[in-house]
Length: 215
Image (tube, rainbow, N blue to C red; front, side, top):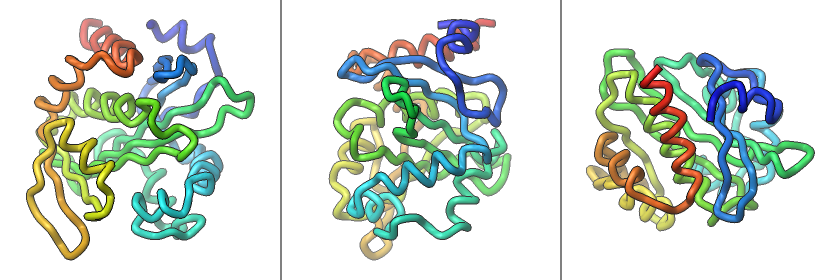
């Protein structure tokens, strides 16, 4: 799927790292756009978080507040393509094109080979493979940044997140009270995802980055 096709197919978020936009589909056939995030996406981000259930917000932000503090929002939007990578998904089947989910990788220094990983999906889109599509996009994006692994901090009661991370090969490495830390080897996770057939949209994600590598 070339960039020209993506450009004509739908409006896009303002990108922070090049002209990066991928069209693909969820398990139910719904067309979506996955692209890089920028500070101009603040309104869409806040709206998406507000549409999450209190339970989902608690598991993602360790708080059930309707919206995280402003400093958290600012941190999520402070994307530079080096210390902070972020991709978001938009529902193209909805005229409002709402945010569906966002995935992040953050590290304190450009020389670090490990970054902190997080993914959040709005409740309306749970169970459709969006988390795997976002994870694949981020993991493929990290290949140009000399990153070797990602870490994720998960509440012990968030069994769905733990299953998701383990499915990608993640290993539990530490615990701090109710929070568990997992480490995910990027190469292993990508190898696992490349072998998966579900959701079918994964093929579009890999094709986009494979074409970029070949260019």
